[in-house]
Amino acid sequence: MLQIKAYYSAAIRGPAGDAATQESMNANLEKASNQASLLQRLFGEILTIYCPHQHDRLIQILWKHRQVTTESILQADLQIQNDCDMTIVNNSIPGSGVDLEIQNALNIPHPIYVIGDTITDSDILMLATGIQQLIMSKYENS
Image (tube, one colour):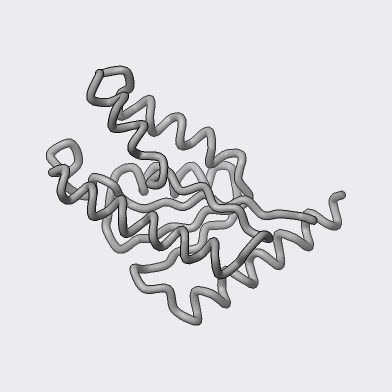
């Protein structure tokens, strides 16, 4: 079965950047993780979503022990994004990481699908159409 890999992009620190509070980051992490999980349930096995927010506990531990930098985290995320077929962006909160991930998707290039905090029927249709096009393209090239 052909699968489509999606990279999920949403702000963690947001416009506050390094000054973001742990409370605001936790709220952003939870919101993004929940939304990525919902999308995964909606599309099932045909779509595999990598959501950095769902792996942040590890990053926070490494960060606390000064074993990673913001730059090294972002570079690792971009490397993972490069292995994906598409990028899903929640643009409800601006952030420099999201901007970098959008620019990276444009450079790869692969499709970018922008959604908000609430997943609408239009979002689902847009994503389903995009997934179908990617599957057709993969099928033709296999």
